[in-house]
Length: 463
Image 1 (cartoon, rainbow, N blue to C red):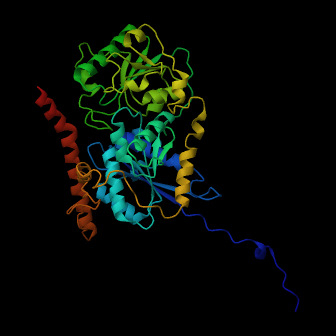
Image 2: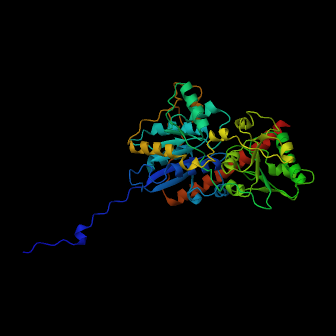
Image 3: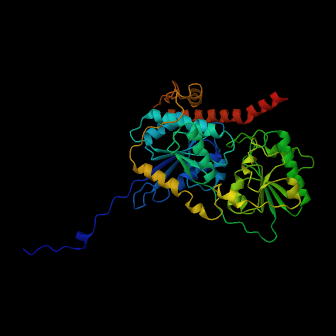
């Protein structure tokens, strides 16, 4: 019998199974932190992260919003801009629900884009789960760190990666951890994940000044009215100049910080109203910067976005250079000036050495800013089972502080849910739909209370 001849089909190699997706969850508690968390997740899991040599492992990012006073509305989510996650698929959860989601859905990476106390609560809650293979835990800050440095950092201790937005921040973070005897190896230098856009190019006939407002800086009515009045005066002094007041939220909405005195309301009370060349604008900051010739702010992170694109940028000294305002962060930048000087045509020039330490990367180095962090996440993913989560604060080291932080998220001092924190599951689709309707109504009532009623009561108490 003649030997069997092989054909092409016999020779073809068996195709390899496609790699499983890298599953990432982002938990955020405000619109700004959602933007930071989602973009950070994308930068940390660019092709190649945790996928071995082929770099072909697909990535699935799930969005989760921690229910609270600053939970973003659908409008705010849409306004954040493109972050690679469908806003319509973002889920709202409580802290305990989030822990159950992590337990049941097997994420590889979890990005905690939260205020420090919430990060600490989630770290203890995740530790209490005692998962046989837990996710890599990442956290950081959404912008300039100008207050509560030690407090915020120690509340974030225990994550596998604590991102610093600049070399300056990385040095400060390590100094705090080492100063209290805590492991500082999690501190990883990166950059703000939302820097980008085309470099600034002046356009013939365009002259646009943008004031980037902040929800809580300054805080008093007198100071906020002063800034608004000076902006109005600047517009009237330069009637051919377009002047924009860039707002973070609409009245009744909350962002990372509470805004009890919206500029919109203050503008309604100005004698004579706003000049025709001054407008209030919302929207994605990057799109506003596309048409900006001078950005003015007290201490907004928008200044770093502007500097990254080499847009002329001014940090106001009118109300003083003070830690309470955050503009002390810009000491040495060459950007601190006043409305009087801006009215006269002054344009600050940034100090290049200061810029190089701030993670602005206007020199083009931004493309590699996340390489170290990406490599660290990849190494942790490849390491297999990770050690137990070990925050600096424990019931033994901070017995008068930690229990209160955990209790705010319905967790006991050992990280387990408090009795009654988890509602029993009800069978049936009808009951589930009714339960969800009731929850939605409760959320609406809660938000109305903290975002509308509470500020009015506080203001009445000050009269």
